[in-house]
Length: 441
Image 1 (cartoon, rainbow, N blue to C red):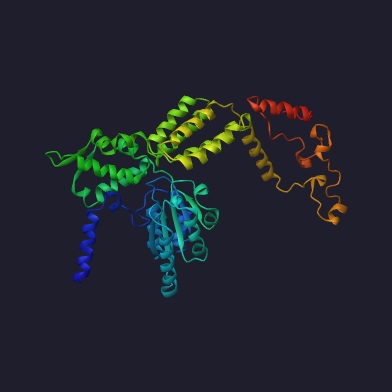
Image 2: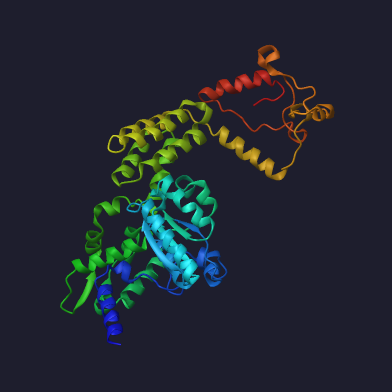
């Protein structure tokens, strides 16, 4: 009994010196605050935990929204062996060691193993490949956490073997509940008489990040000298001092991450290079991931400029490649050149609208027949059936154009692509109108 008491005492001492965010980490579903769309009654993650049926998943969301806590909670509730790796520090060797232990645990004890990989978007292809077989055969249940879109950062085979759950930044009411719980339940803070004069400021500076909220609270308490009444009053200046100016300037994982990238994209779409460069500078100064910025510019080049200036997509794609090879700080120049060009380029969303309208028709009428003359006829039976019969080879006609039917019968009057009157699209529109005289665009 003495050993048990000693272990318990040691655990309490370790916890006492842990950061508040770690001390306040919830250990049960009942204590978890937020993400009701995943953990509310009847919701997918809650059902999976209650049914004791954990499966591989990717938790995608901003920092401080509960990804690590959820992984630990799933392991605890399903009585699975739990291993955690950080993608920045771990390599293929570490992954293989966990797999070997998981195989032994399954064979000897029939126990499941959960491998939690924080920042899985930083795992390279070889590291991700090393996980595939063990995830597929059930040796490992993989839980990956990422702040980046997993469809860009996680290899397709691994993604297809996992479910993706999106976590949202925490709202004011959720942050308030977390704050109140820390003040009343934490053994260190609850022993102090703490009064917070400006809770809203604390929530704003936290940017939807519970970890940042608790870290800021803890620092503010440490910086504040108790009053004679032994009350610790956290005022506006002590809270601002705890978070520091740079935190308030840009939070690359919280709400400002989304607001500023939105302002950046909309400035380029609105043809304001000066505003685009300002928002770019805000992101760079705040330490934003440069690949994230470049990737969004590639999308904008196609979605908002398109064929009004086809070179925009070429430049944006080259930018993405160049920053990978150059890195910061020089990458800032390449990003600035590209942002200025895209903001200054003529705009058209005709290609974006065209594919959305075409997809809408495909979903409404998914099985329209290919016109007989357009069908492939690799066998004599197909030729005898009329496949390919009457097809007009465009290059045999004047101007390389034959006005034959290409759309299914039901869609003959459709005009998906309607070029605008900006840049190269004006020429494209005039050219198409001269060919298809009955279809004015």
